[in-house]
Length: 374
Ligand SMILES: C[S@@+](CC[C@H](N)C(=O)[O-])C[C@H]1O[C@@H](n2cnc3c(N)ncnc32)[C@H](O)[C@@H]1O
Image (cartoon, rainbow, N blue to C red):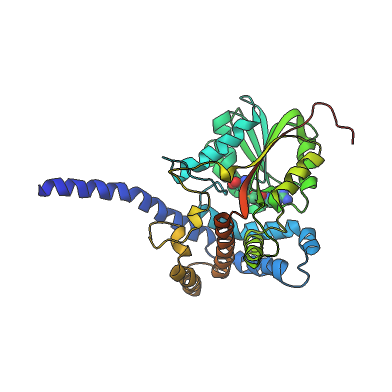
């Protein structure tokens, strides 16, 4: 009997060993990646200045969007990769899914809407470190070009593509280029399909970014996107809702957030035929979890990142990071950066729980084969 329990204990330890090992090695990689650099300290002050000091009017933030976003991702990229993975977006969890499979299903669904063939040319607008681009290239066999405004993400994304055998020639390959999606550095009619995942919310003007996407897409090609939006439940006079909007904008590097209807209107105004526009957060996930569950506070330490949002850890975590800064294990500015990201997390969670915000306003649109008369 003792042997039976010993064998069970051995199997349980073996099962737990893999996630613990992965978590510890990701943490070491995260700390090592940041080590010795002072870019956090410089960037967080610059970023806070852009969001909070001097002229913080919408016009000023829109005018500074490129700086605002790039500073934000200088700060956030390694934190995202450490705490979330190589795909920087939300997904609801359906029955039987784990976090990773829910992320993949969310990406595959969008890719499926593009209706492209093996070897097609796809653009990922606002690609992060190209986690979705790699998954979609493997899923569709299409060649994916990802564009991001942030130089750190370009280098990191291309390194990961190389490490995962997806850089180079042939179908199912991925490359990341640096550029601004308000002025896409590509020829007219050059892509068979374009997608954007939780990225064009950073644009100062939706018509501007969608018009650029329309320009580079081939006639008849499809653009599919998950947009960050305020919903019908948002009341601009409600102070809780105002807090949610502000926390998301400041904690997530956005100049402004708009209502779902504004995005759909902007897509049509840019010249697209809108095929579908709906809130994918409202799709059923019975037996699973809504998209914002990973940000809901939990007291269970193995529920990460939820554990950091419980009231004690929420207060304690910045002090822990400050102590690590003091002994030079993490660079100066790490604690301030984490506070800013935590603030964004709280805004998203409150937005999800109240239904005032969605990170998955799904829009699918086609470029007309003949130019529309205005
Ligand atoms: C939340 S991340 C999502 C990344 C990626 N779609 C994913 O799901 O992993 C937003 C991305 O949009 C990019 N981005 C924001 N504004 C941009 C701009 N004006 N031009 C190009 N990329 C931009 C950021 O650099 C970042 O890579």
